[in-house]
Length: 243
Image 1 (spheres, helix red, strand yellow):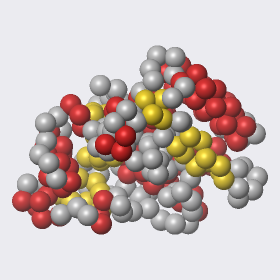
Image 2 (spheres, one colour):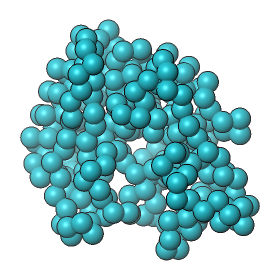
Image 3 (cartoon, one colour):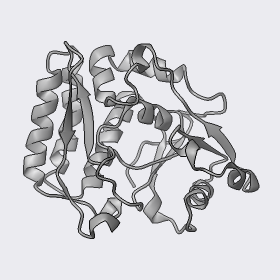
Image 4 (cartoon, helix red, strand yellow):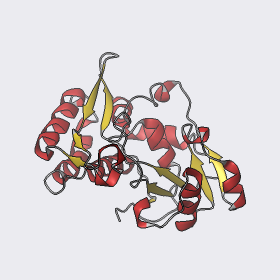
């Protein structure tokens, strides 16, 4: 089972749930960077109220709107590191789950000293969340493969490249993906949605970090396991790795 998604900064619970249900996450890093999306920002909730705030990494696009995700660069890595650490600490230090999360956050923050590539930071932030939930899948990047043009054909080719027999599609992709292309390639098309109550109440708007700080990794993991598609083989692939 394959999930294909752009690297997002501390992505939403609905996004992480889709990746968690897959054996392979293809990091879609060779498509256009979208400023109004979640590729360089995350919405965080307050532990005591319904207030929210954005955590953003100011990003430069060398080729303007045509810049692909892997080419985007942080404007000021040191400032972004300080802001990310400070905002997360301010929002969640009162949570009993903060110490463990803070320990996992350390290596992500250290990356700011080694790279100015926004996608490397955001990918690492997603890996942090997946590791906290005990995901054992495989990670690859779309830019490492030669694929055909066209939204659906690209997805089909990426599934083939990683040997996936099924494609896990979220609600956004379901609006434009041509399912017949998957049928022609003998790849199962598996729609993926999450509930809208309980832990999932703000799954499509708030970062997974918020759910982890409110409910804890064990509860969030059990919740995710409960919504996995019947054909999903999460946990069977070998080795969470950054290739």
